[in-house]
Amino acid sequence: MPDDRPELEKLRREHEQALVLAERIAALAAEGSSASRAEAVQLVSDYYAQELEAHLQHEEQTMFAPLLKRDKAHFALCMRLGKDHGALRAIATGIHADTPADELDAFARILRDHTRLEDEEFLPLVAALFTPEEFEAVLNFTPLPTAATGNGNGH
Image 1 (cartoon, rainbow, N blue to C red):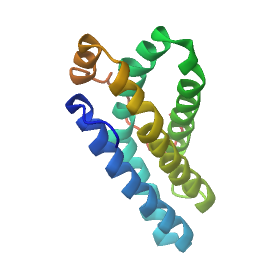
Image 2: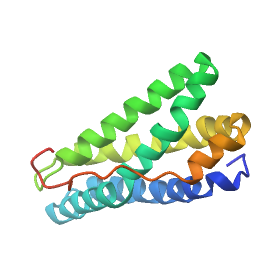
Image 3: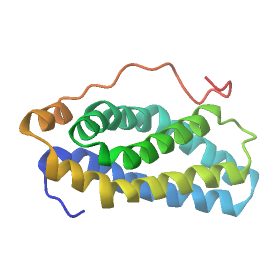
């Protein structure tokens, strides 16, 4: 990543892990067997419950609003990222044993493309524009509790 802000280190590590996971899910979806699809479903469910939802909240609650408040020119980027967040949530919370491979592949593709966009455009903006107080909010973020996910009922 082009920035060195220590406040963003946790997000950078999460992004590295997300890219590895996206490739693994895509490979499992492409493999096509029921066992590989089941493994991909479990990976998505576990990832959403253990990390992704908190990560999405972190970005939404500590970064989107300050960027938009500072300059409406960042609206399109924040909207695109927000749409991706919604798509990732929709797939992850609706996942079940019979989720088709193309839906798993879509999750992997969205996660990969989204993460790259954040690394290339969003986080460099945050690194360049945020005040010390805004970085403090990034560092001290605590996600809201959520209900268990990935149980196959969609919510």
